[in-house]
Amino acid sequence: MAGGLKEVRERIKSVISTQQITKAMKMVSAAKLRKAQSAIVQMRPYSDQLNRMLSNILSNLGSDASTKFGKARPVKNVLVVVVTSNRGLCGAFNTNINKEALAHIDAKYAQQRAEGRVSVMFIGKKGNDYFRRRFKDMALITEHINLFANLEYELTSEVAQTLMDAFSSGKYDAIDIVYGRFKNAAMQFPTVEQWLPVAKLESTNTSKMRADYIFEPDKQELLETLVPSILKLQFHKTLLDTHASEHGARMTAMDSATDNAEELLKNLRINYNKARQEAITTELGEIVGGAAALEGA
View 1 (cartoon, rainbow, N blue to C red):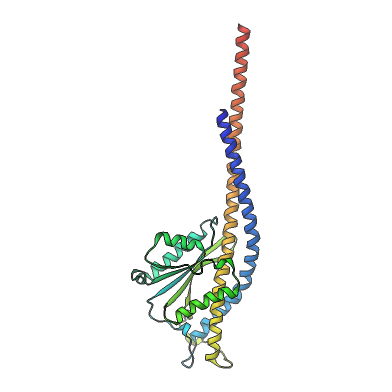
View 2: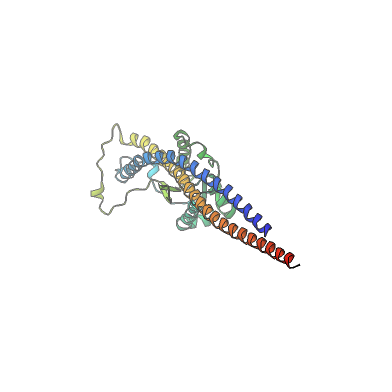
């Protein structure tokens, strides 16, 4: 019985130690989440409006102007950018993004994958860990895997420019981004966006949707500056979304782990007290029995 009590005491100490760690991680994630959430909440309306404007402009361009980033061509070579976190302990957040990326590739680019024409670029280590262990038929690119170490716009725009140059040169015919869209601390959604070529607005009635823009100084000159800027901002927004989603998912996971540890502690303490009472009862019975035997002698 003494051995059993000692084992339960050790388990209680271990669970308390783990609970202290999960509480600390929850607090750290909550502090980081506030900053990350503020960044994406301020960025998203601006980015979404610019993206809608870009799609509208490209959908209504006449024959007198065009942009290389809006021209769709036969898709032979594909790049899928998978944005995950660098660390785990955030529930199923990274797994959901990786599975969404794989499902997207199989659904949209099955032929290109069979021909070995699908490349996957990773931002965040967890995506690379998932793909490199399971899939050898896709080219895996890890050049920008540590981009989350510094999410300054100047750095993320350089990566976006590199991707735009690859699309312009014909290296890739389509570039899609898979990332975690942030809604709140408890809800994050794996999301797929077609980044290049820029998706045009779909409408059954073009005349009603046509926007009458006035371009100054020149339509073509303006597009050559406007379109890359919006694409860079859109790319930056996906990183901020995933960054906030990671901390929200980790805070929720650590909160759940802390609650589970508390429930486990409750059960362990009940078991410990029961075992201790049984041990005391047994010892008292032995003492009473021994005393009675002495009196009888």
